[in-house]
Length: 218
Image (cartoon, rainbow, N blue to C red; front, side, top):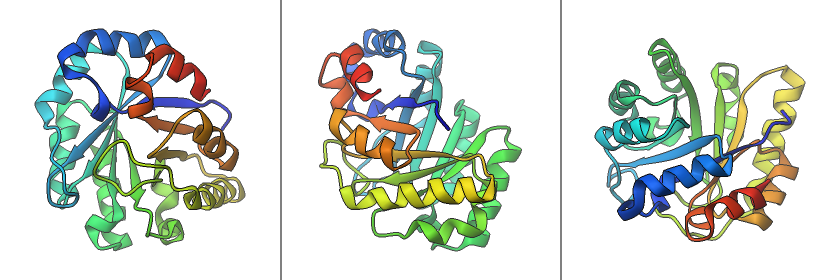
């Protein structure tokens, strides 16, 4: 896939200046908004509920990419599907890396009428997803430990992107390859070269001029 998607993470957004920042993201040409849901259990942080997603959906026309970092992704997938998510990704680790459970949840999210994908933490080999890759719209590779923004990029995650790209080409699949964690103008180039076609960036986008930062990721 040649078309690059930029997905600014609202985890780093200035909520005292919500509408103007969302307007700037739209102006920048970024196509998606990345929405991190953390339950304080699966990761040691607590973030957003469905009402905030509903509010952002009203305030912005951008595609809503919802990343569930929760112990019970089955329960939360329904909540965020009903709140307006366009795409929901969940961690295979939250389901014990049981690919039957992963497959069932992918099917369930698709039955809600939205896109679905799976996330792997840095220590999880991406190859375990092979049995279910044909069901995915997207695979998200974490290039930091999930839970907090502002962490440094882990370059040893790049081979996961290359493997996913090669597998997609060899098996004629259509999933997108997303990377999240420590993305800036330098690491974005590495990620793109390795195979990523969706870049999540939080701190880098919202702590700089939004339009300039998004443009530099391209």
